[in-house]
Image (tube, rainbow, N blue to C red):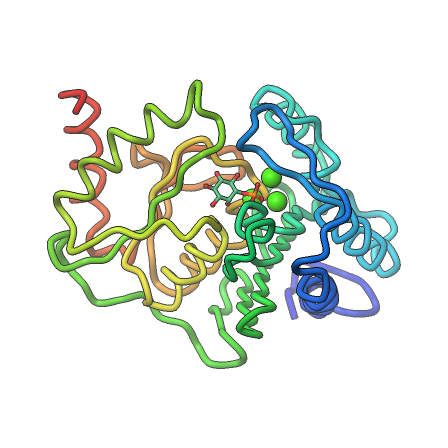
Length: 281
Ligand code: IPD
Ligand code: CA
Ligand code: CA
Ligand code: CA
């Protein structure tokens, strides 16, 4: 369906098919993890299911688009520097698929049923397709640049909340406790006081899908990677929302400190984060 992309099967159809197949397999493996490792910190988990799902998605994509490039979380060495380098290298690609095979690995490991598959396609550095699949609820979120966003075929629309005080926001606890978490906590502290309530579901991509669908009015987290947010950011934008970095610059693939909202509370949220950063609470 996207005018910018080629292939015998549409990229959106391939993304949907890959996310659905991987999601079903991930769900079938819940509670039967064979291998549990940590990456850079004891909080940063990876399982055989993350790796298996990524391989499955890579194969499906390459069957249809053998010339396209793929950036997948489990193909990149852990750490901010390596992921930034991988993104810089990948951003020269004409067509780049960006995969998070399991977003919410900690939840998956603990049996907390809130995780998803996230697949995006960027054309010359700009995300044009975003698909997020939640296998537990069988919810499929699909966005195409300029063509809107849908959950199981029904258009998604951001919420109407116009003030932080009557908004529910999601936040995230980045596993990088040295750098990202202290910075994150200042913002989380401020938002906990200024909103109706905050939620930390443990999946960046699903938080973004929920902002798109109007179930949350915003989401804030620092230290994210391209694969956490590429698909979700397009979903939010195509549902009428706003996605920027914490300084208010428009979203692009390299943004790591993310603010995504219904648009109406965006400035108030940015101001609240800036005030928290300045006062250091
Ligand atoms: C993580 C999740 C989590 C967020 C972390 C991400 P992963 O991704 O999205 O909600 O707080 O920052 O790294 O490792 O489960 O794919
Ligand atoms: Ca991970
Ligand atoms: Ca992730
Ligand atoms: Ca992941």
